[in-house]
Image (cartoon, helix red, strand yellow):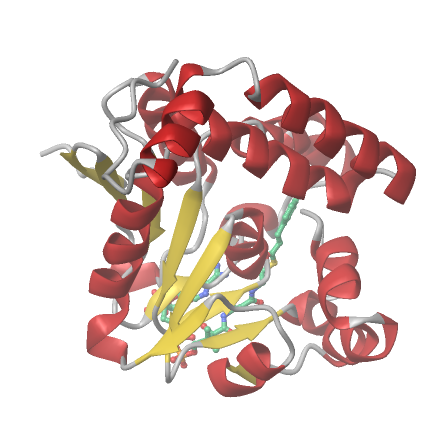
Length: 257
Ligand code: DAK
């Protein structure tokens, strides 16, 4: 019997992608990671889908890269595996990604959540970059994203001690979009996805690109891209419709153009 490493529930205008190795706490094996990328890329190309939720099991969003798979790998093996290209595929997704996190989001799992555009977490979710405990450092952006989100001093604590942080603290530090009761996580993430999906898709796409840019380059580059995207949207029908409907006090009708 074929075991599906990733489950997809497509309910336009949203889709929910579930990591499905619950017994291994959704450790991100190469095969599961590839399945995730394939599914998310397919949804990114699917015009009917406008926002994508990524979730895991009750116990774990994902407990990191699969240590069993990495244990015997040499530096050359790791290099050849070209994992960076695989993370890049997810970073290049243009539609909003919303992480619905229950349980552990550790190592690559924490980085996967941070790669998403919004994070909804359950009260007992736990985040961390425990790589130092196995002689590593974060390899998929953890040092950069945590530092930008939390500042140098908190990020150092997480990266250098590997300690886990609960959802309450992570929220207070500004890393989460929402914290809700554990059993309401998926529902809240889907609600957020629906809310975003109801917005004009071009503005959502370019807004995402501009916010992402704040993480990538200098402030000047980010501001320049934001300005370019802002002007570009003035050429869209949805921008005209949005402003008109506001002035006419009616609901907008988005055409995606
Ligand atoms: N890998 C493989 N198996 C894992 C796993 C992992 N990361 N995490 C858990 N499991 C497995 C356990 O081995 C166990 O399997 P069985 O013994 O039942 O067969 C099962 O899941 C249940 O786990 P535990 O028995 O340990 O459950 P506990 O509740 O006692 O503990 C725990 C839960 C999450 C605290 C613990 O499992 C744990 O510490 N797990 C490891 C967490 C961790 O160190 N994560 C970081 C991994 S390193 C890269 C980019 C990124 C990365 C690498 C490369 N490139 C761009 C090149 C990322 C690296 C990482 O994430």
